[in-house]
Length: 564
Ligand SMILES: Cc1cc2nc3c(=O)[nH]c(=O)nc-3n(C[C@H](O)[C@H](O)[C@H](O)COP(=O)(O)OP(=O)(O)OC[C@H]3O[C@@H](n4cnc5c(N)ncnc54)[C@H](O)[C@@H]3O)c2cc1C
Image 1 (cartoon, rainbow, N blue to C red):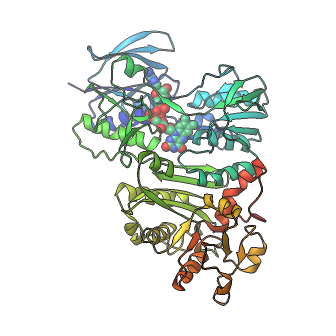
Image 2 (spheres, rainbow, N blue to C red):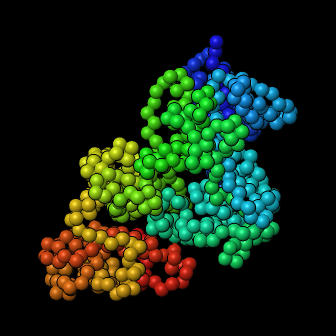
Image 3 (tube, helix red, strand yellow):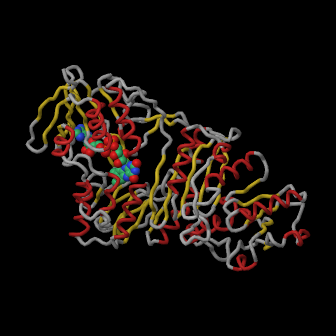
């Protein structure tokens, strides 16, 4: 008798389960239910319709029921919502939204991939017709039509995660005036707040009205009101404060939920009912580094889970490696990627760590498109095990972060990363790649070869009149410097040692940390013991300070900013 496979949800996880099941079993009867009007659309490309990068919204739909039937013999039913799971009878109750009819279908195995729904905070006005979310093709069409028909100019996007930022960027490209409102003190939670300053600067420079540390309390027809009392002009509001797993069906069926509130699954993505699997945004996953359960609503994990779950139905074993959380986003002219544990996560979970922040060129400096790449690498202390990384720059940050993701998955250390042999040509990178370079710096710190202070510590040093040496050449210094730094170029310091005190800490920076590292090593060789390299150096300091200087009007610690 053929295997009756039912799938709830017809997009990332659901469609992958159905297609994999077909590859494994030509005789299976596979039915996929999708409550919306489309199956297999590109969620990740939705925001790009707002700018016209994806011109036709039809292009967002990758497959239709007809193709599923012809190519894969899969019965894909749209406008078909699974309302109930009847575990005793092994059936589901389905509502056909096209004609209002309800019917049941029997299963041998049932797969749940219902995804996650946008969180809507209980704010006055949240149900108004000019408030939107972005989850599917119908949503993006509705938003786009409204913006065009009502000729909307001012838009507020609430929530600065990757969906919020992608929506903001595409709306700006479409010529809109956009405010981005975020309750936390930074955008993009996977990044540490120091790295997020680069993204704040970019959003600000691109004309986005970025508002941090504030939340909406009321939505009116023309404005949104913030907790701090400010009113922001908004004829349309896009809510992107996060998503919550769709657990309604699972709850109704008595399936177990985990500590995070998402569906609990085992190694093979089976729920507490062995005939029901669950995958995708609706489930709880295991973070291999923190050893904690978490939610990770990303497409890559959903696809892997779908393949593994479908395979398990046919007794194919798989290795469940857990998750580490890798992602990448474009923020106007910058690319930003991250993987693994960040500082906040390490602190929260008690992981002992230190980190490297370097700003090497993403490719050989004399090449036309060489740009600084801001790279932060976290490692465990004292083992040197690689914990995570964040990269921001104009170049290919994803390549570097993917390398680190692979290293984390293999439990690699700084020594492994230092020795990693990578491809190189001047057009693509540097002979010692950013990631090799970060490992070398990390090993130096771990082995106590030299000491560093970090960019967020610099303001206090300046305010306390610490002894800071600017090791750049005179012309670079004159183009902008820390207000109280002494300019002693690396090329001159051996003749000017008498200017460097031995009875107090000495902090050294240059443009990006390379010359100052050499300076520190030389001073140490000459008997100085209280010497600190300022990681990130002038480029990092300027990026870190800029946005808050603009927003708060506080006193600058630099005479002029340098960003290149
Ligand atoms: C705007 C946007 C941009 C994104 N960008 C990225 C990105 O760049 N990178 C990345 O990794 N991830 C991205 N994601 C996340 C990614 O799309 C999700 O992690 C992934 O789609 C999850 O797959 P899923 O199958 O669990 O859920 P989904 O793909 O959301 O599919 C779930 C489907 O189930 C249907 N459904 C729910 N309940 C029922 C029911 N009872 N009966 C029938 N059907 C039901 C829903 O209508 C929905 O269509 C983005 C998401 C959005 C919304």
